[in-house]
Length: 200
Ligand code: GRF
Image 1 (cartoon, rainbow, N blue to C red):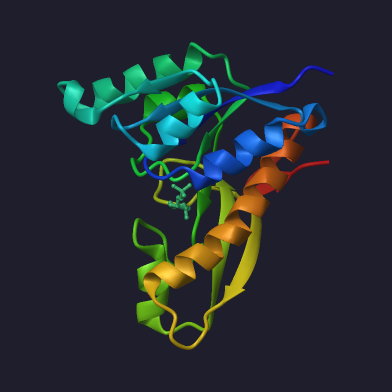
Image 2: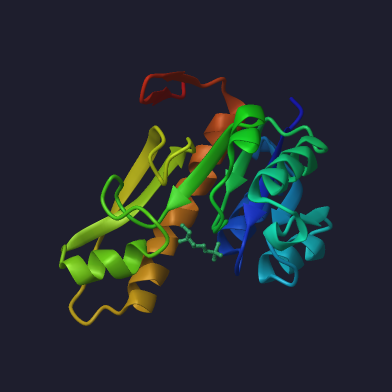
């Protein structure tokens, strides 16, 4: 069986991307990272893709007259690689209606949604004083981290945790979850009924 092409979107260090690249080296995993897109040049994520021989593209909001035009351009750049779906792996821009109309997008978030949506989930969980947080893999809709949930894993907060120490522990769990979910989505047809995502 041939591998399922995906496009991965990154903004930062790309350790989630690296986990997907490493997993896809095994043909049985069933995923081919067809391209990696970034919202700014010079990210470590882009360098990881280049090191693996994966095509990359950059789509910067600042290069377009409006956010709407950036959204259409991003949808086009993704479509050039004909992915079965897109993985937002630490991509720190909200995707617009053009991209979401044309592509199924999977996101990971470093908190147990619907708690602590947004860009500062780890900091917000620590500040709130919860003793358990975690990570969520979900489909992207028009809201901020509001799409149907695919999978979640808990991570305990330890005394003395800082935002960095907690985020690093969450990312260990997040990487394993993302590799598992992306592989299952790629190898099986999945259905979405209301807020329920079913992967056989
Ligand atoms: C992840 O925790 C992701 O959920 C968050 O940013 C982190 C990305 O990590 N939005 P990396 O760039 O893949 O190492």
